[in-house]
Length: 113
Image (tube, rainbow, N blue to C red; front, side, top):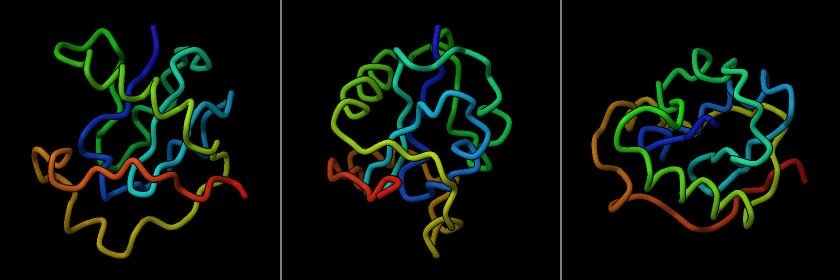
C-alpha cells in the first residue's frame, strides 16, 4: 500500500506533507506534488498534514488513475524534501473540482535544486 496525491493538490501545492515525510518520497511538478509509490512506507503522516485534503491511501475507491499518475511523474519530476510557500493563489483553487483536465502541468517543479 502507498499514499496517493490527487486532484485537489493541483494549483494548491501546500507542501506541508513534504516537511513530515520520513522517507522523502514526494516529487514536485510545476503545480502539484506526487508520491513515489515504491518509496512510500505507508506511515500515513502526510495525509492529515495536507491542508487541501488531497492525499489518500491507495485503498480508497477510484484512485487507480491517480496511482498511475503519481508513479509516472515521480520518475520524471525532481525530489522535494523542503517545504516552501504555496502559490499565492492556492486558496482560490482549493476545493475546486475536476482540476486535472484544466490545470495539470506535466512540467517539472524546481525540487530541492
